Image (tube, rainbow, N blue to C red; front, side):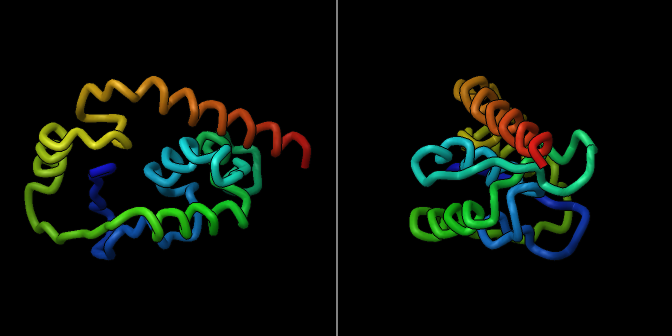
Amino acid sequence: MLYVGMTQSSKKVRDHVNCLHSGFSSPRRSLGALLKEQIHLRPVPRAKGLSPTNTINFRFADEGEQKLTDWMKDHLTYSSCRLDKDIRKIEVQLIEDLRPPLNLTDWHNPQAAYLQALRCACRHQASSERRQR
């Protein structure tokens, strides 16, 4: 188990594997940061504009997003389930019990500092990309 997550804002299933890009997916950003060198990903701002969230929530250049999606489809199994009540309570309990390494909150993840450092490096690279445009 790599990640446990929920969405309350929509009745649609949140698909972190087939989503358009990592700018709206924390587990994609974390996994991409881990695989950046191995599959040659280039962090870029998630959108045009000077908003800090565009680099904080970086994505990968288009060809990199496809590489990340392909890697995930080749190496991961994923699923979802619908819960109608106590969603947050269930999510927290699952994270505490399963300790998924890509979850950075709701448990004392011993890899969190390492993962956050990799994501920080990606944010800096995305910020540099923005300045070069």
